[in-house]
Structure formats: C-alpha cells, structure tokens
Image (cartoon, rainbow, N blue to C red; front, side, top):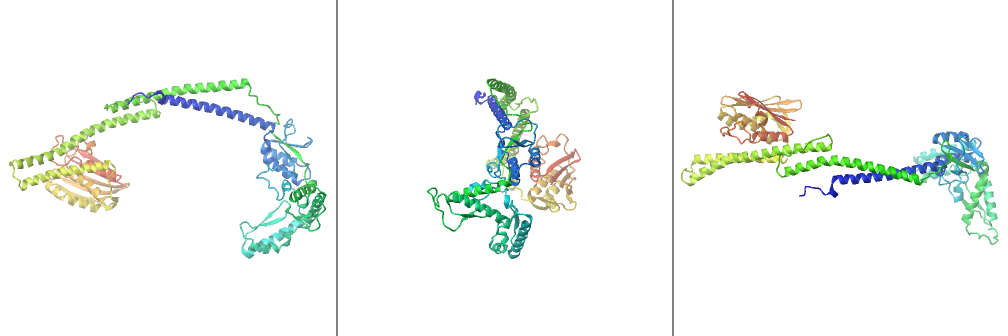
Amino acid sequence: MSREVPLRRSLLLRLLTLAVLVAIGSIAATTWLAVRTTTGAIRQEQGQALADDARVYDTLLGYAATHPNWNDVDGTLRPLARQVGRRIALTTESGTPIADSSPGAGQLPTKPSATVDALSVDTALTAGLTPVGDGDQASARIDPRSTGPYLLPADERTALKAEAAEAIRCLQGRGGIEATIAYGPSGRPRIETPGTNLADSILCLDARAALRTPSATERRALAQLNAQVNTCLARRHLPDVRVDLDWTWTRQPGPVPETRGTVEPDQDHNRAVGACIGTSRREQLLPYVAPAATLFVADQGGRPPTAFDLSRANQARIVAVAGLVLLITVGFTVLAGIRLTRPLHALIGAAQRMRDGDGSARVRVTGRDEIARLAEVFNDMSERRERLELLRKAMVSDIAHEMRTPVSNIRGWLEAVEDGVAAPDRRLFSSLLEEATLLQHVITDLQDLAAADAGELRLHREQVYLADLLAQVVEAHRVQADHAGVTLSARTEADPVLDADPVRLRQAIGNLVANAVRHTPAGGSVTISAASAADGVTVTVTDTGSGISAEDLPRVFDRFWRAEKSRSRQTGGSGLGLAIVRKLTEAHGGSVSATSTPNQGSTFTIHLP
C-alpha cells in the first residue's frame, strides 16, 4: 500500500477544484442576475413590461363597463395607484389626459401598457380575473359587466328576487335540494344547485316563469338588439334570427332573402350571424360605456426610460471583478486546504504506525474543529486498542492458566492409572469428576461472557417476585454455606416485583452469594436483601468476610481477576463469576457496584429498573 496519495486524488486539489468551480458559478450567476435585474428594471421604467398588471387593467375595465364616461375615475384610480405603488395615468386615444395619479411626476412612458375598452377586452390581460361571455368570439370580447339597457330597475330586481326565493323554497321542500341565488351583472338572479340532479328542480323552476323569461326592460333591449342584428343580416342577404339573453340565436321562419351573388344562404352563415351580433351589441352598449382610453403604468417618479449600455469598459470591469473574486477564492482555498490536510497527513501516519504494530501511536491535537475532534477520537481509539490488547494477552494467559490446572490433573491421574501407579477406584473417579466439573464451569462461564459481548444474550422476561427468587437462591447455596460454616439468610421489604429473566437473575445473584460464601470464614454470615427504590429495585448481598482493599475494589468485576495474587485454588472459582454478574445486570438495563472494608466484609448491590 502506497503511503503517498496521488496529486489527482489529493484532498487539496479537490478542494481547489471545487472552489474554482463555485467561484466561476457564483460570478456567472451574479453577473447574469445583475444583467437580468437591471434589464428588467429598465424595461419596467420604460413601460415595456407593464401590460401584465392585470389588477390595474381589470379594475379600470370594470369602471369603463359601468360608467358612460371617465369623469369620476379619479376616485377609483388614485386609491388603486396607492395600493399597487405605481403611477397610473389614462389618456384619450389622441393623447389628451383623462386622469393621472401623479400629475406632477413628469412625462409619461413612450409606450402605453394597454388600451382600456369595455367593448374590446384584451383577454390575455384578464385571464383568471374577468370571465368572458358565452357565444361567438366577437361577443366574448365584450366585458360582461357592460349591461347597458339590460340593467334591471329596482322593481324588477325585487320581483325576480322574490320569484327566486320561492323557487328555492320549492326545491328544499320537494327533495331537500340545496340551492343558492347568484346575481348576474344586470341584477338578474339565477338558481344554482351544484352537484344536484335537476329532475325535481325542473318542476319548481318551470312554475316560476319570470325566472325563465325576459323582463320588460330586457324585452325592450332585446327587441332593439334583434332589429339591429337583422338589419345587419339583411345587408348580407341572410335570413332573420332571434337573439336571446344568453346571446345565442335561432333562425326565424320565413322566406330566404334573394342573394345577389355575394353570399350563399348557408355559406359561412354562423360566422356572419356571430359578427352581426357582436357589432350590434357594441352599437347598443356604446352609449352606456366609457370611451376607449390608453393606460400608462410607470413607477412613482415617472422617470423617462433609460438604456442599458454594456460597453467595452463595462465588460472590462466585469471581467476584472470576476478575476479578483476568483483569485481571492483560490488563495483562501489553498490556505484552508493546507491547514486541513496537514493534520490529516499526521493521522494517516499514525494509523500506518498502528497498523505496523506500534500501539503507542498518537497525534497532536490542535484547535477545536472537526479535524481536532477526529484527532481526539483517534488518540482515544489508539489508547483503547492498546489497553484492549494488553487485556487480551492477559485474558489468554488467564484462560490458559485456568484450564491448564484441571486438564493437567486429569491427565496426571489417567497416566498414573495407565502406568499402574494408581488404582481406578471410587476416590480417583470422584477427583477426576471434580476436575472435569471445574473445567466445564470455566467453559460455561466463557460462553456466557462471549454471548454477552456479542449482544446475543437472550432474556426471557416475565414477572418475578423477588421474595420467591431469593428463597430459591438461599436453598441452592445452603449446602455450600453449611459446609463452610457460614450463616446464609434472606430478607425482603414489601416483596418487590420486577420484569426480568428469572433464570439469568438467579444466576447473577447466585454468583454473588457463592463469591461471598467462599470469602467468608467459618462463623461469619451472608445476607441477601431486596427493596424497592424510587427508580427501580435493589438487591444487596452483604458478607462478613475478609473484604477487599481500596486499590483492588475497582477491578473486582474484571475477568479472571482475584485479590489473591498467588492464584490459590483454596477458595475455588474461575475468576469469571463477578464479570458474568456485571454482564447479566447490564443486559437487564441495570448496574452493579461494590463497597468493602478490609477485614470487615463487602457489600455487592444490583440495581435494576
């Protein structure tokens, strides 16, 4: 494995490349945004992009549709200008001023924003705001708010409103149909039954004839319109039609006018009728709507348009600024990359030394950034690795020592029997069985610890009554305690109950009891107690044995550790019992601790949640 990283894969080169790309992208984006913003602002000043202000256009269009002139438009125009924060002006098509929200702001833009004409609506500017009418294309361009002679007087509105109310009551009474009244621009009500089958509603609506037939005002207006339409059609030698309130038409019975070689009776008939209806409607509405006006929308100052000059000097300035930004970015990136890669190289070297067997490999920690944190974690890992390696070597030595003694004893007695030195009697078999049992005990303890270390120690939890469990532990170790001359007892407070694996919990407490009995001289006592605490349950094993010194107390739960440096087997045990207690307690989510006074005794406490 090469110790040097190729330049094309180095972190410094990658950081530099990334910084250059980011700088170039930032400069290009900033330049593009500046040009687009400047161009958009200038176009806005010139009035070249103000035709999309649909709100201003629609409001003034609505005024034109409902007023015969522009005399009082200032009351609508000035509040609208304050709301949108723009200057709004209207002139006649010849340029004569009509109204201006900022009359002293200077000249108007050279290009108008739109033409406000209620009889010729620009549908591109009113998309989504003002609904267009039904029927032919020509009629659709007439603002629906232009009612003219179709505007219902108050008495007709009142009568139609009463008819609509009666129709709604009929609908609700016959089939529970929910209906509402909507009013058109002329004041005519209509019944709306959204999402309802109109089978029952037809009977109710048919009974209200006024809702289906034109009023007197509407009949007069329709008569005038039909006369104008049929006059237009007669000039084109087309048959008469009848136009209804929804601007649809039907052909009237009667002779077809004689053609004079210009238009066949059915040739382009629909298109011709639509054109005549649109023209006639405009002629009819013309006295009721304001005349066409030119709309100007500019900023509040009304400044004249300016031009955006991207000259060679401006281009040179942009290039110079971009180069300076790029140079500064590269410089800072190089400095940051060097500071970043130096500790990484030190970490790489330390890791390689650790790989080669140097357990003392460390790196110097400087700063408080992520790299410094990485160096701290590496040093901690190296220290732990060195400590674990020492523990591993000690464990291998301990395992070999623990297993060598019973295996050597078994082999020695078997060789003695084979050589005829010892007789295979009952005493010999008992001794061999004792050594084999000790060896099996060591192996079982090692298996439990290995399962706990691998996270494979399975618990079968159930409700455990500690009074019963402690009684079982006492009975299991009664023979051992009586043989050692030790008094073994148990007591509980209020019979605590917890959720735990009874077999594993009994094993943990049993290991503590067995350890206490082994280290308590004849005449002493071992007491097991259990009590409920604020945050769980505590189980305490107290003995009157030899105790543990303060310097040895932190190591009592280490594997194969004994206070007896000579490793005498007079007290028995594999040196794994307390380590297993700690693992079983931690598997239950608890903790175990020990306190001791030399020559007075020890206390081991298990705390379980």
